[in-house]
Amino acid sequence: MTRIYQMNMAKMTLKRPATALLCLIVGLLVVQDVASFAPPALPPAVSSRTNNHHHHHSKVANPSTSTTTTLHATIPSWTYYSLAHVIGGTTGTPIVISGTKKGGWFDRIPKPKINPPNFVFGPVWTLLYSLMGVSVSRIIKASSPQSSFVLKLWYGHYALNLIWAPIFFGLKRFRLGFMISSLLVLTLGGILPLYHAIDPIAAYLQIPYMLWLSFATVLNYQFCVLNPTNGIGVNEAMRQADLIKNEEESGGEYTDDMFQSDLKNLQRAAAEYAGL
Image (cartoon, rainbow, N blue to C red; front, side):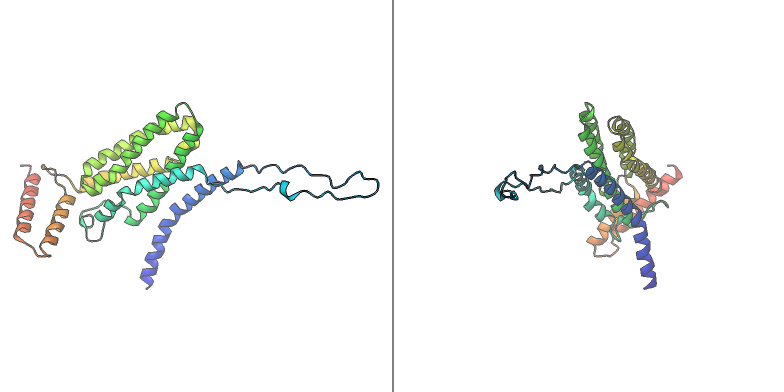
């Protein structure tokens, strides 16, 4: 029980920084929106005295003409853009979950030492996609002549971001994933100065994304090194996925087809090692 408690506390500790940062940023943005709120002016006071020489009457306002003030809570506009970016980012989640499930091909391949635990990626990407929406909202709100062009570049970058997971976890093409990840770093590096020229805060909010992209690109490269693609375009991830499929089809028995497949892979690996 003590071991389980320590593991749960470790997981919570890793999740807290991303959650705390998200709460801090959202809080600052809400304060900014509230600070710009001005309540409506109240109607002028009505004198309660009259100039009657015989009586002093209190003037009573007609209920039908009284004015009431209602404060309507408004949702900041960036909320919708953040939500849209987060929802879009979840399109690849089923593929990632399928690839990283326990006992799957991802568990069987060699991984870089810097590879974070699987549970880290969800909170991190949720935070990053939320910040993407905030930046887009600020660029739109700025109404700059360059906003339209910059947003087109951003949406192209965002689409490229969404196809990485299907390429890496779905098709298991690590080298193509590395190319896409490198392109994401380059395109974001071109977008940030354009963001800064329109709204500096929109650019600053994407610094965590740039840092994570750079880390993810290095991580992707190390996966390529540890799981090289052979001459026919097959890497260790693909081979393990095929083995798992054969095991499931054979009911867990080691069939002759599986033996022949392993033998061919060993012969191919030996030939590549010998430089033949």
